[in-house]
Image 1 (tube, rainbow, N blue to C red):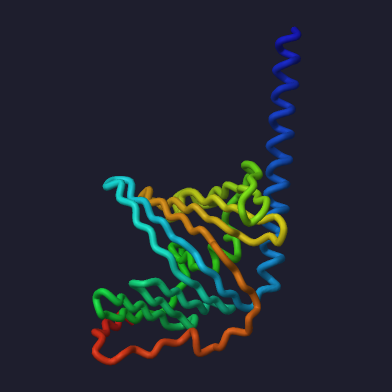
Image 2: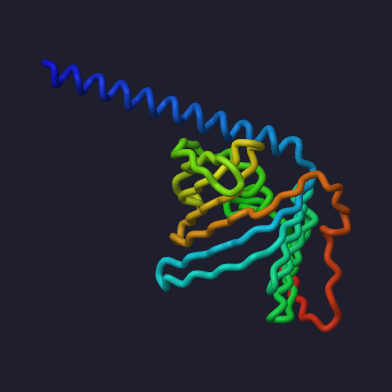
Length: 212
């Protein structure tokens, strides 16, 4: 009888802890979205690491991101300049001396820097994992499970700095088991970025491929 009672108590405690963690995670994400609502533009430095499961190859690149609402951003690395004004996307591969032009579109594969690094996606169910200390302060670690389990993104983890509710790290696993990590090193918000940053003048002598 005591063993049955203890089991019931344990189940109750586990259920309560799960519910509390869920509420905590939702509250943290709520603060992230409240913070995002105050952001008109942002400039940040980041490091992106991509791991390919089959070949076990790891690629790492550092760069800068400039973002302005809505859906305008510019990503700059040594090898790539990616710019969109919310209508057109220019992707300039410097090693290939080629610019791809396409129409900007939002679908299940569109996890733009703005959406991932500044505004937590809203089509995921959050769960609280733990709290950690980092050089940028105390952070909450959340696991986000996609509502659509057949979607392109299969798993998402966020590290949220609790002092200002900014996302400082993202781990994303897609349907091909490729893992992509973004680590944010510095963020400056509401700098009054010029709209001209989000259009692109193609340099002379560059091959242009128009996919629109």
